[in-house]
Length: 308
Image (cartoon, rainbow, N blue to C red):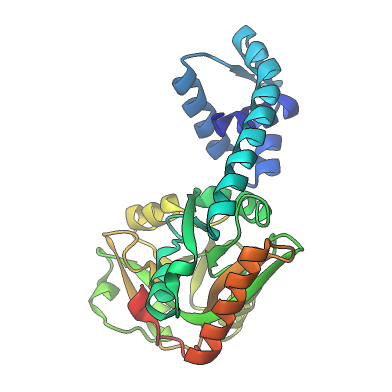
């Protein structure tokens, strides 16, 4: 099967610009460059040259470019045939999973509470957090569901969300900060502190929350992260000794950041993101999840922390 990094290469080649390719892929230019380096290392070939005028292809790059689209087309057909054969044999549910949006929390809930959990087989499809928007675009095609707190203004228009329970909004504290000794924070503890938050415009709910904090607690210094959170965001906070607005389910992401609850009344919805038009098997699965939600009355914020 084709290397998925070829898709990044084709977009870079068509755009002739890392910045324009990054905009199309909803990632940073640095992430595009990292993917290009990985592809070149994998092939043992130099594919592109960078200059002040943009990106040009090497002779090897021109050759790979000409063959890549045919390779990708044939590979997709092969995968579609294999997927059809697999799905005819069993009810396969394809769930995306990443470091910050892991599916094991939901799968554990399903396995412990479904009447017949073996009726469906879970196929876990991994993706990187800097490709969350690309993963969302593949819903209904290569993926059936994404799991987590999917409150982004950039999600596809045909995406739908089933809330299952709530995640508490917390603060991740570097071990060098004196606040790390506290078991719970008051909002006043955050006065004078730098807090990295989701970039303005990425989340409707968090935008409203930030505005409320600015109006009522202007002593808190808030700093936008770059695009969406990834491991680099957590590393940045640890290295620079600043706080991070986070969720209780991310308490074990970084060993040098302690996740501490805050005495404020704010949480985020956790659940399944899916396409409006989904496969019959996925729709049957979704209806069973809805029934589980109704049966278990998943309303409280922390009642399902055991799945984290």
